[in-house]
Each structure stands twice: as C-alpha cells, then as structure tokens.
Length: 268
Image (tube, rainbow, N blue to C red; front, side, top):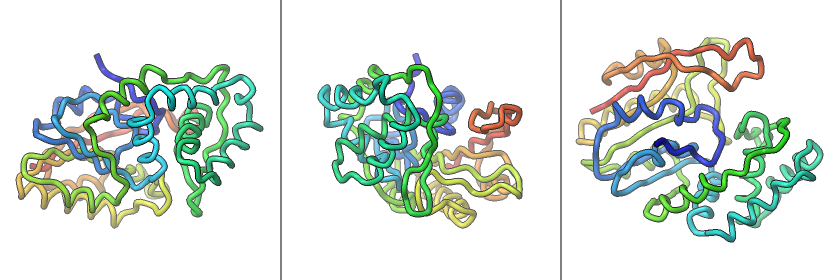
C-alpha cells in the first residue's frame, strides 16, 4: 500500500510513485537533494536515507516531526480550528510564521499553512517570506496518521539543509540519488519556478545534469524527474529516458489543468 506524505505539495510524486519505483535502482542508501514532500523516501525501503533541501523551513519541520513525538503532533493539531479557518486568521498566522524565531511554532505553522493555503503551495517572495495565498476549505484535513508514519520512518533518516551540489558531493558508490528539482518551464514564456528563495534556473538545471553524469561514472545511480521538453532532452542526453503523461493540478485556471509530458532520466 502506498504511503501518502503529510504535506500537500506541488508536483508531489505520490501520484507517479509506481512509475518511479519501476525505474529506481536498488542500493544501500537513498539520497534526495530535493526533499519536497518525501514521497519517494516514504515508499522505499533503503537501509539508510539522506534527505536534503535548500528550504530551511522544510528541513526544520522534518527534524521537528522526527524528534517532537506526540507532543508536537498535538501542538500542530491545535491550529486546526474553525476560528483559524478564514482568510483573516490565515494571513495573521502567515505573518507570525514569517517573523517568529520559535522553531516548534514555525514548524507547526508550516503544517497549518500547507493545509489551509491555496493548493498547498509552498511559495516565497524575493525576500524569503512565505507568501502563498489563503485557500478555501470547509474543514482542512489534519494529517495525523501521515505524520506518525513519517516520524517513525524518519528515526533512521538524516535531514540536512544545503544546496543540491553539496548533497550530491556526499554520494558514494552504491548510493542511489533521486532528484526532483523545480521543473523546467513547459514553454518559452514561462518562468523557471522555485519553491525556495534564491531561484533554480537554467544554469542550475545544466549543473544538475552534469553532476548526475559524473556520479554515474563513479558507480552512483542518479534518477531525475522533470518535464519532457526540448531542454531536458538535451540536458539528459546521456541518460536512459522514460516518457509518460501526467495530470497537472496546480494551475488556478481549471481549463489549463491538462496533461503534461514527464521524463524519468536514469544516469548509471
């Protein structure tokens, strides 16, 4: 049975985990330089797991879930009230999230914002402030069982906040690296997207592909997910490619939520 992440996440790999698992090689340790919602980590059984992300709010949350136990779970649940399910309270708590220095509070608010915000978007402005707008839900779901499962599996996992290049440099022969970077745009008029401050543009996409090729030469298998575009066809020319269509759910325009081409590029 597939395990859902406790976070809603744009581009969440839970929907295509069956495809990923048919391509992902076996190995001693799974390394994810773009942790995201952790869907691959949650649905694999590697002896060791290293999850990293440049989003320090996300890594802090995962560490807090790992160590906070039932106390943190109940604390997080306390924000899921009828009084807090309105735009006014959402924006007040979003401001608190952006200003507090309390790590546990910030992590609990991350879960609140994730479940009460529009489409679960995790979006930041140029100043590094979380700025996803409020959503409209009758009763936002509190992911109790998903949090418990993550906490149990995370006991033997390592979480680090760092750049993908630093994480990939930690890979050793026998490791398996799964990369789910911010996707390249589907058209020339789109912008390279980012869910953390700092951006992830064309240069970073090329760097990722080159690092994957280098690791493959050293006995480290690297699997990358991305859109199927002319750009990724060039960038991943050294990999074995699997192409398929996936449903898009993020667009605010329902008419544009069609299918898009996706690739799984395996280096090594």
